[in-house]
Amino acid sequence: MIPDSLRQLLDATKGQREAEWQGRRVLLFNTAWGELAISLQGAQVLHYLPFAPDTGRVADARPAPGKEDGWLWVTPTPQALPGTIRGGIPVCWPWFADESPDGRGPMHGTARQAEWRLDGVDDEDEGVEVHLSPTASLDEQLTPRVMIHASAQRLHVELITEHRGETPVKLTAALHTYFAVAHVHQCRVEGLAGARYLDKRRDFSEAHQQGELGVRGPLDRIYESNRPVILDDGERRLRIAKQGSDSTVVWHPDSQQLPGDTPAEAGLHFLCVEAACTRIDPVWLVPGAQHLLATTLTREDLAQ
Picture (cartoon, rainbow, N blue to C red):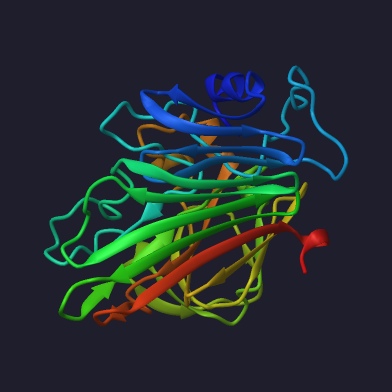
């Protein structure tokens, strides 16, 4: 699910181009393998829609009413700048949630509000690879880069952190993916059964997942797990794999607690399942080291 204004820009795109949307520069791809949209505010993937092999989608062919347009969800009423866009895959760096070193930094770090530059695009018939880096320094010692690879088979996003300073640094981060779903209360997340989790809604109390996770109300949990999971919303089954992460965050505020930038009806159609490094598995980087956090999205029937 993406806003109509972003859909119109994609429909007017042939191949690759840069455009402006909601006051932000965006990279747009509409090709034989599928569609991709990336905001240069925050290096944030906004949209991914793979086409079936050897087929495409004509520009005026819209999804049927009630059907999601792509695998990712974006609010229809995004905040104006300097606010951030809720949806897609926000990059949370160099800390997750409110875990800044001094406790006063912006929620989910500085990367998501920053401007990023396009360092390179490798565009081939079967897919595209995009490399991004921030236009200004975001940390005294750490430097992030983002690589995005999209094709008809998968979406793969990497957040690479390099330590170029002189003292060890503690890092938390997340690829805060908002999945488009038919209805959040129909969702089931498979692969977390038996995993320990911290419940943020209950002051980080510890529990273990009994059976597979069904979504019936508000959730904000950090699962200690590095396993792939399957997100099943009754209409589509997506496999969510990751690297460099022992935390899987599952979040939805439910209809009574939606953020101000999310209308009630739209809020029923997303679920966040995130590859993360949190207080469960913070990363300590020494000078000269680097860390890779990645997420890979595929349809279950195409997963290797």
